[in-house]
Image (cartoon, rainbow, N blue to C red):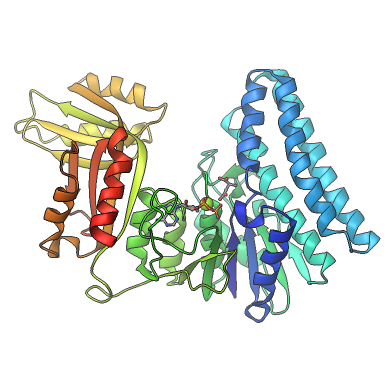
Length: 451
Ligand code: ADP
Ligand code: ASP
Ligand code: MG
């Protein structure tokens, strides 16, 4: 069987939804399972309904809801224009039902002026609910035998709402029990959403549909997972920033995971783990250019395949924290004390460098940062440098290429580099620079290394 995941822009209108079905149905011999995101702009709009509710702004919430109706109903009508009355009615009553539920949830939230992470997940889950109902209706209209699955019945997570962690064993067990891929049949399921063991809706974090795809793939021992998006594969840099970026055809799991973690939005950072577990190749392809090969992410033996830099990524909204202890010398527990603070506050640390008397590290901006800094100040002096970015060069055996570092530093001449980290994975050279220098830095490095 195979899993095909389509992102928000890939299901952005009726024509695209038909294109999505063409792509999936062309592979009907491979027992396809289609995992879809919400239509483009939908998740953001649902989040704005949450903000309006929090402020008790009913008018604003209603106008956001109307926007979603204006987005989804015309697509429904276009998809069912030539369908039988039964299919058109079934499609419409499904969408009506979802909007009724959404409207009452919204009303409740506006009344109490409150949106907890738990309610927010309930709210945003409607996006994937709507898009998959539309796809399923379109499949019916075209006579494609299909089953619509509610992913919440089989993707089980903990209760960390808005960024839940997978309960792998239970999810795999349920996916195997409830999802039955077959030839000449299309299974359709929502990405991004899941539920707790007691059935409360959760989400896997922004962009999490990619992760859903490999979760389904690993549970069902897929021969392949395909991530269909709006660019032709993983590229040497974000094409929105670097128009000269080009597609990387083959990349290892480790490199892809590193790229995703350090900012390549094209795949969600958690996507790779389930694929590695079952050695499933992951393709990244362009919905608007389906014949193009795109990128294949797969296992690669050390020492084979292209060496050197594959891509440059960047991550914004980074704060550099420097922690100094007067008792650093021989203080074996100092690093542990620092990391315990970040662990307790669930803040991931990206880069770390040390000197005899201090430790510098980078974290993404998060509301949990202020209390963490407070904790650190109890046993050390803390300096922070906000408004930074990390740029990462990813590729196998980086340090073995003797000329790399000199190329990088000469390209970045004049740019203040605040932190450098090479080593660790041996596939990632990361630099922290002030945010205002990021774009120029990526451009110069791309020119030097790829153009
Ligand atoms: P989808 O909605 O299909 O999940 P996303 O917007 O989440 O799509 O991801 C695709 C986007 O990722 C591209 O439009 C591109 O701007 C961005 N991107 C960032 N870095 C890269 C990269 N290295 N290669 C390709 N795309 C990238
Ligand atoms: N719809 C969700 C989001 O916008 C999940 C996804 O697109 O992968 O974050
Ligand atoms: Mg995405």
